Length: 259
Image (cartoon, rainbow, N blue to C red; front, top):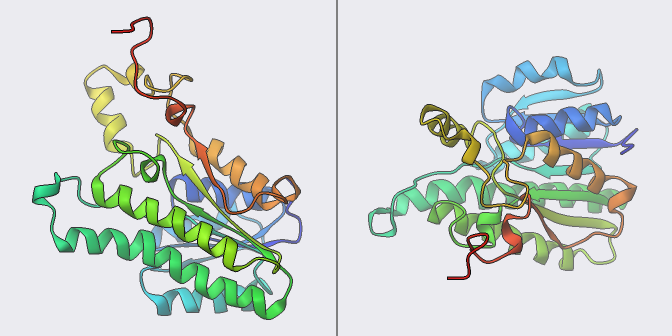
């Protein structure tokens, strides 16, 4: 878990998995450029190391991403790690009620935002010929139906495919590209689910569909990301790694019943 001397970009770092990962990377010795569209990103600075930086970035705008990479090169001295984590849930309507705008909003951030980050960080890494590690946040919703709204799920499936294609295109460069696929993690994005369960007195049922019988926490995902960025992940490439307590391990069933 040692990232001493590494320079990392984390997007979507103002809260949830992004924030936990930015802090974990800094604690492991990395200098971090923590980015988010929200101005709340500035509050994260105090939790990071002295060599770290925060910036307001909208990953759906390529010019913002280009500026982010330039800032990392200037303030951190280079980029060894990219955690392309920024994402949105978007519309939760049924298929017949979804609009083109609903799809465009989600894909602009989740897919195009990830692509822009990959494009410009990869170019930076190739120019310096020192390799690097790239991890993108996908979701179990990108692997199976029923894990999230339709546009969100489709966007995360696209992220997984983008990662796999990038890993293959970058063969021999020393740049590894992977995705993580979280299940139900308690973050700002999923907070309405937890709030509704608590209001109904059913919070103990959250996570009942996975073998661990609970939801996950951002730090549990962050520790995996840090491990993948270090020596422990040196031979992991082109993978979509599930972090869901076992949710995606089986078909639906009711324990103790066969029919």
